[in-house]
Amino acid sequence: MSGKQTEFDKSEFSTPLVGIVIAVQANFYQVRLDLEVEDGSKIDRAGELGGTDPNGSEGDSIEVIGEAEKLSPQLAPTETQNGLRPASLTKLKTQNSNLKTQNSKLKTLLCTRRSRLKKIGQRVMVGDRVLVEEPDWAGGRGAIADVLHRKTQLDRPPIANVEQIIVVFAMAEPTLDPYQLSRFLVKAESTGLKVGLCLNKSDLVTIEQQQNWQKRLGEWGYQPIFISVYNNIGLREFSDRLNHKITVLAGLSGVGKSSLINQLAPENNLRVGEVTGKLGRGRHTTRHVELFEFTNGSLLADTPGFNQPDLDCNPGDLVNYFPEARQRLAEGNCQFNDCLHQDEPNCAVRGDWERYQHYLDFLAEAIARQEKLNDRGDPESTLKAKNKGKGETKYEPKLQSNKYRRTSRRSQHQELEGLYQEEGRRMNDE
Image (cartoon, rainbow, N blue to C red; front, side, top):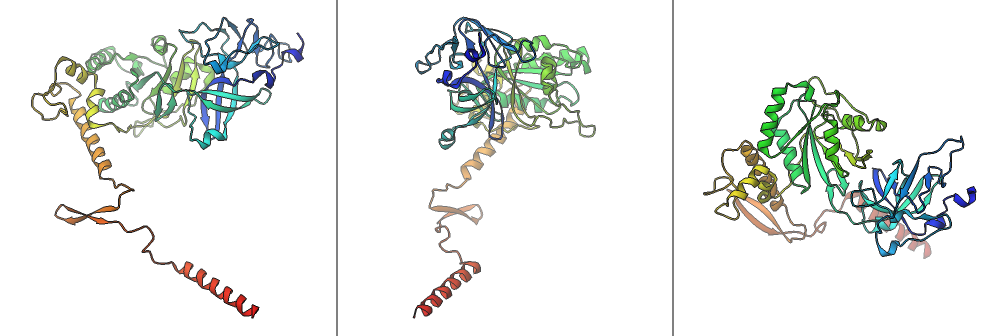
């Protein structure tokens, strides 16, 4: 087959390509495309069917067998003379698709966002399924024309279509703090996604300590995975937990999130750092969100670590983010529908369970945040609140903005200079 017949041509891709955004930096988006060939031929990195690189060795290629699931009637298949089907008809390999691949090295393009998307305020996030137009195969460039429907969306970290969150903590270095762990778990539960727990550096503690923590966390409602990246312990179980899903790793800095990805996929070679000696905290090495693909088809997002996530939930919803509290509510009901489970009578949640004090602390924080939001002035309001002392609040009319402000000296001088110039022109005309 001649090279002229096998080259990718823009005219062959009149229908936009479909891919997933795996990284975002500034105004550029790295998109991994889904490519398919109808007759089972290979598409190599040079963009040819069954081709080879200039050195004569076979390039990284994929082989597709079977039919891909159609995305929409607008993206109908169009046959070309080379038997290529646009990538817009291909989805990521999942358990529900019959798309099979050999060698998962798919084409990646560095894309920009169409100005139309910018005008309508359409944000492009890591994990988004996007349509790509005008691919430049030689330069590895393209343009994102549209963003497909998102199943889920997280704002911190900014990532779309996530299916589960795995909270990663270390058994030691840094020391495992139950209060911090509880806070991360509550934040993860507030997203509504499936939440898992992974404890790294298990080789630094005894078997008895692991058993104690397993029993303790079981009472919290979690079954943790004990791993050791350094000694390659528990990594197979962790890999099985990913299960062909888009997963986000969340946790403190220094617990080994980036090291875990490096162990599972060494080709990524992520930057890692050691725990500080004085404070016992990790150093921030991950600066942005990025998706990494593994051989089993799973996508894993490494996120920047932080020490204290914000709890911005409604006070009435907080109880639903504690599995042990949900269990108590399933077994009995509170007397009041708006019960906050503090000191109300006949409360089904209040009682002797370990994280109840954590719940009360987080509840006080959520209530304080809610009150602060309620006290914030309405910019559309024509009244403003003024404290008159002794707890008395009085509302007064708002003055119109800038109406009663004193004119600056600079503006006065400019106005006078304009008058002088106008007077000078008038005298010259006379």
